[in-house]
Amino acid sequence: MVRKYFIFLLVLISARNLNAQNNAVSLNEKLVYTASYNMSGILTDIAEVTMETSTVTTSSATLLRLKCTAATYSKWDNFFKIRDLYESYVSPKTLTPYLYKRDVNEGNYHKFMKYTFSHKTKTVKALQEKKGKEENKVININSGTKDIVSTIYFIRLLNYGNLTKGAKKSLTILFDRKEVKAQITYLGKETINTAIGSKECYKLAVGSSDTNVFQGSNDNILWLTADENRILVYGKFKIPVGNGELKIKSASGLKN
Amino acid sequence: MKKLLTLLAIISAVLTIVLAVLPISNLAIIPAVAALIFGGIAYYLSKKSGNIKKILPFTFLLITCALALITFKALFTTSQVKNTDELHTKEAQFEKDAKKELEDLELEKVETIKTKPTESPKPSIQDTSRKKIEPKTKETKINESEFEDLDFDESDLDFD
Image (cartoon, rainbow over all chains, first blue to last red; front, side):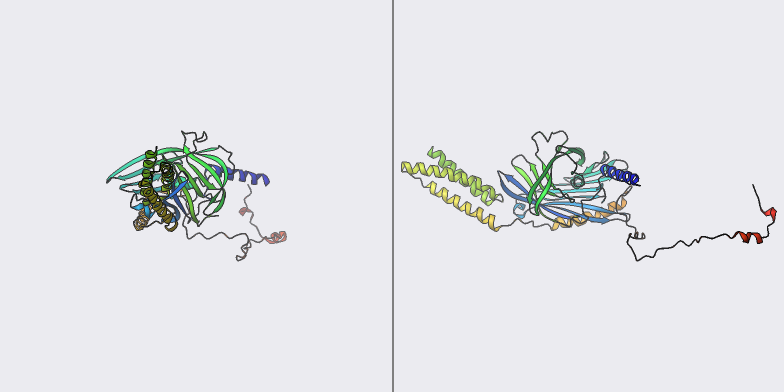
């Protein structure tokens, strides 16, 4: 009896490692961030980024809608207005994407992108609209390839508790109709002060597989809360002059 | 030296004013500090030589005005997102379109939440609202003496 129990437990643990299950992302959560520009320690708020989840019901199933919007603060609108919308329709359990849409509206620049995933044939039908031109393309993908939005949410499903400092995890992202290999490096735990209180966080370096993030070039760093929700509370990104920062403003509808 | 410092102070003061007016008014602090340092040194050197040019007090006036504007903006203006109606309309439209597109999609081995209203929930372990159903099959005891009274036709019995 005990032996059977252990075998069951072992199977359960291995299954969890192979295909991360959603124990962190709620069906109706809302995370609001402030994107700022940091130059020599002086912060300037530029835009508000909202990450929202909701359910979408079709005749056969209920999917999770992951929606990200970025909008510049009104003081910037006269200079450079940004109204970006990214959304992904995914499986609520594994966050496998089925449909992805990206609508970029930055100043006079407009671009629309739609990916329709077929995991059976490992292909993606991509539709791009740019400068009034429509372009269709079929892209071959590897299993496990995700769009940028579902990847941002997917990194919350990974188990960082057992990782040692410097441990790496690879992810494949489909961005601008190209598969990009991304690598997440676990940098340890750190407690930081945020707008939603002091939080113990997992510190992660995000970079391309080609760059060695552990050799002093940790340009893009994310802080995820070291709890069951693993929400992104702080992000730091290197830009040509100064740094870009993403700081949490509010969080609601969390799962745990 | 005095001329160079005065020139640097004027350039920094003008840059402070320009940045103070823009949304990046926080960054105007950097040229403001630089203008004060350059202007201060230039003023000290001018006072030493006994020839203070009128441009220096004017530079200080510019910096003071810019600092007042930066302080006002930092204290009394809040960052707000406005004019998002178009974005909200687009969000709603995208969702509506996505529903149609997802209907056409073959959601293979859908590990999503299936919406089956016919499925009755499984009773929990401590659910007392349901009665325990006893098995209807009763154990039937065979009384061997009853067989004695039975009249068999041997041809009906087939022994292999």
